[in-house]
Length: 215
Ligand SMILES: [Zn+2]
Image (cartoon, rainbow, N blue to C red; front, top):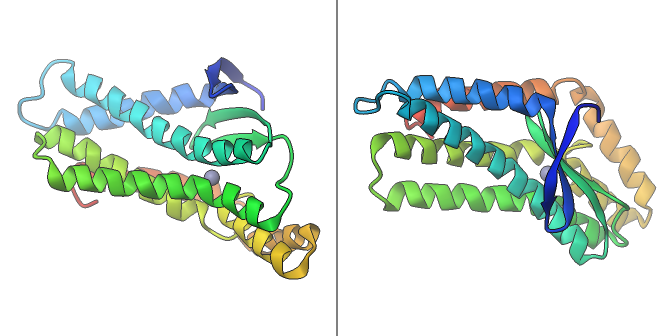
């Protein structure tokens, strides 16, 4: 992809940030900083610093999702060429496909599983720990985002994780990996064009609800 900047390695996987990522980081910091500035007691630059930290944690959640896919792939002997974070998501580039439908299913489900675990973790923190209101808002935001990441990616159409799960299932039942690809692409065709738009609206829809505690 054009405009990717290498920023290091994670678990030996080359890690890239797309330039669009910096734009979103700025926007999210601005949005959350603005919301957090409404809390009494947060003055000066502190709401913006917290907004920046929240934005970084949002991207860390996306990275954790991609690492879920990547580490399961590596455990199957598949090389992960890169992980890239871009505008509204992440992408782990695997060198090749899994050898069996079950292994393909495990790689596909790993990302949403990590996001769901993070959702449960942040909900548990929100319920169990008496945090100051701005921090509680950030925890609630992270819970919402991880739930969205899990559910959105489970939509059964390629290139989403749900499409890969469907592909693995068709492969399992037909014994033919390519039938799965055709099937999952057909399912996604009517959806083509809107996944990013939906991601965008869900992402921003989560902003006010999270900040005001309607997680
Ligand atoms: Zn995924």
